[in-house]
Image 1 (spheres, rainbow, N blue to C red):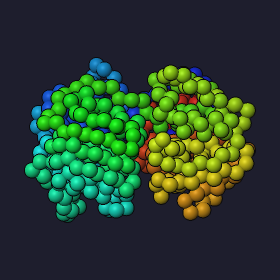
Image 2: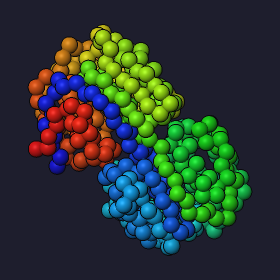
Image 3: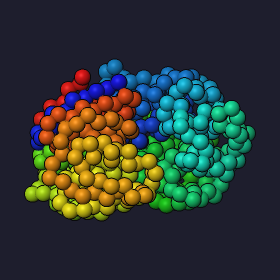
Image 4: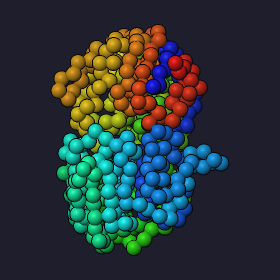
Length: 418
């Protein structure tokens, strides 16, 4: 169990580098299954989720490890691939399901456990499966495993009912080695999709339109190993931006892509936060106060659901009443009772949160229920008067943020482990 003690009301000031994108690293590491030989992936954040994906690759017969000489670099040697992914690892992390498309493409058979806590249909694993079936795979569910087989995947026209990021990535990887042309309609448009496509293109894939609603893939017989650098993490960047504002401080974010943060920047500016983007950096300062705003989460380029909890923490200290509508994940409000323990005034009405701003938050013991909820509670603790104890039983924060407490301390925070 991870316990953090946060002594709040200390403004954060200074410069901070943004880490590589977790949500880009996971599918890109999965894609190395399709690249025979040695690939080098740089700017990979050192996180629990990434470590789990590396363990999945090793269990599948690849050699994968962080470089000892080059920080945040993962080397992958791919000389054999097994078709069965281990239950104990895949059920730990939903993103492990990404390996099904690459394994199927190179082996013709993949046996992958259902991700932990997921029944087909409740979250869109079924969209992954329908996409693979459209490419010619035969898919069966047996004893908690998804078993997919195909003599040869063939290109097809696929249209998603919902622009699922994971399903778009699964089909994109499988289609790269399929015979003929694949058209993916209503595709997810996130920067992480573009990064995966660019990685595959560097390896020899033929892909057009990544980042738009339709992606065209012309299958190739084989791919080659590459060296590639992953994009910065836009959610970590957004979290750092809120940290500057909520602590009444000022931060310069470096190694960032401001264009990936347009929705977050616009919403913070609407609230009265001073945000000045540059070419690869952003300066954020609190301004004179925060105004209430309404927010609705949407697929990219809309406001990201992964930033909703952090913004909720900031809105709890804003003047007026804000309405936050969650349209992506139905369980994205688990942080609200914990924020209320700290003095926030928030009421949940269906899939909307009504936030009445308060003048201050008070430190309190709180429990971390998921990754972004943990980030929101840590931000609230940084702003609160007194001491906040974060109890993170499953190390959620370490799943998605690299050394976040240590980096906050370097900027003026007072966070210690208990």
